[in-house]
Length: 80
Image (tube, rainbow, N blue to C red):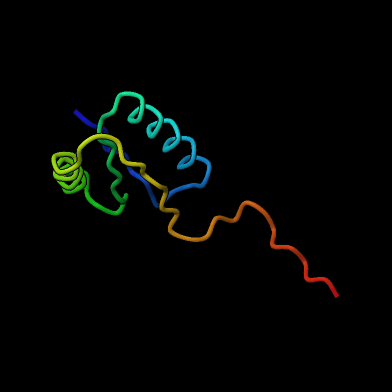
């Protein structure tokens, strides 16, 4: 048993909420959680995810992959 999740690229908030929820579930159930990139075809992504789950034992944190730097705020203005 395990969980396969698309960890990016994607929208900032969507990835944060999804990965926080699934990381918590996998940790609480002590099952593998593996991340795959969205660029793969579904069949190829499923095969990659299943191979990763078979190799992994227990919980391992999955981090988001945004594809570009998050733009959630404006950069600070330089002080003169």
